[in-house]
View 1 (cartoon, rainbow, N blue to C red):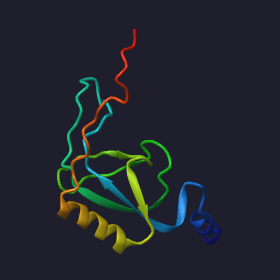
View 2: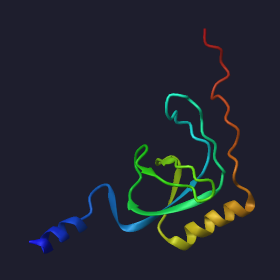
View 3: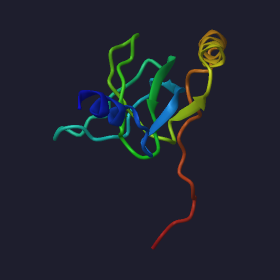
View 4: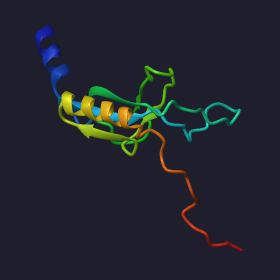
Amino acid sequence: MSEQTHQQNKEHDDKTSPVHLYYLWQCAPSVEVKGWNGKQSGGCYRWHYLQSRKRITGYGQVQVKCPTCGRRPRLNAALVEVYLDHPSCHNEATRRNREGIAQPAPMVPNTTEVIE
């Protein structure tokens, strides 16, 4: 009985992957309003990676902790890049941190029209 239960736990569903996935993410300011004070939390702009079998497909599924500044951002599919092997993900994070690819482009409105 316990052997069958163990086998059922190893089966993969739509939310998990049979292999490890490596997610490259940046510790950047959050646009989430956390709590009632409405402050935006800053980030250190460093690039890090996460190894997981969980697929990140939606919003706020995985919460990580930045090893540099200690922030705990929630990751979504728009904020990560997926790699299938550890060395390439690690090398890309190292390259971006070394070259200073840290600060994103300034945020500007997507329209200049005046709405009446």
